[in-house]
Length: 412
Image 1: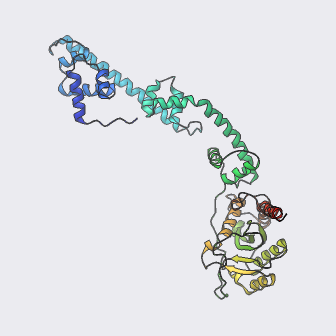
Image 2: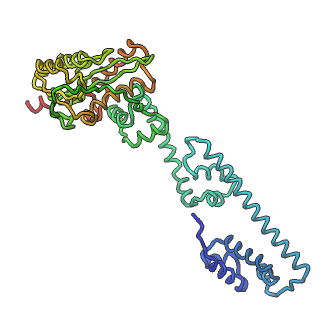
Image 3: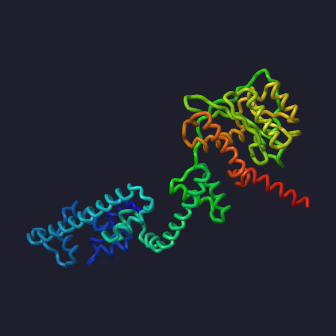
């Protein structure tokens, strides 16, 4: 608890009350005033120092009723001895407090994960110092410390449970290639039968330094062609669909190689499940790159007739060759506004996740063959196993499977 800020007038009145009360004790007067005994004594001693310390005050403090002359040598000696004793006691108190604070500074600077509170320090040093003194120096409530102490067994049990959970989290995190954060880890644990909430998973991951992978810088891949015929935005930033095969979206992203070179990836995603139904990797960004991805989508789905495909205003998507391909496949084109990444945000997010989880902090993929194998493995695993937040943390394939199963049930 923080000390109260008493006014000079209050201090003076407290000293006067003590000095004028026959047989008064620091403890009794302090209790009446609602102040600490040591605080009242300090006020009285300071006042006596200021006034020169009369013999009568000394005698009163010693509990004697008769006045003693200030000129009495023996009384002056006793008074000085009492003062020396008080100063020595004060010095011992200050030395103890300095020792406690010095140990506390080293203790909390260690970074040990078991050191979670000042209560732990009090408990570890209670054999050396009084609990009361430790709590005073660390500014904690004694009753709160004892309440904390009573819960030691429950905390130990939670700690053991957290250690077991941390092992399960590491398995899931490792299986995801180090990519999953707390939401997907939680979904995976629940799928395995664990009853756990995301807040606890996030706390345990934070405690054990288990983290997902962060975003990296972007390279511009959208180069608009001012000569293309305008295409309407049929999505209006709605990247959802009532069923598979209705709405698709696509984009191009760069894949960094060693030596400052790049490969480029074009993808086609189904808006219903975020499944990657088509992709193409090449060392160029010509129309053929995006055309190959769309053709693969058509092969995967069997037909794209009647579907809408959304993209940005890249020159590849606005070319005549690509428009003819879309017409031939029965696809209606849709484009967002020029220079507005939010109009194709879902694809932007997908590519960011791909590079974050495959590069894992590395500056590049190395050579072109390694890059192709790595991206291919991630794309296929993305469809079959990777949990997606937009699907209620189900993989795209599982999400579509459950959708089809539900439709068959309704039809029956």
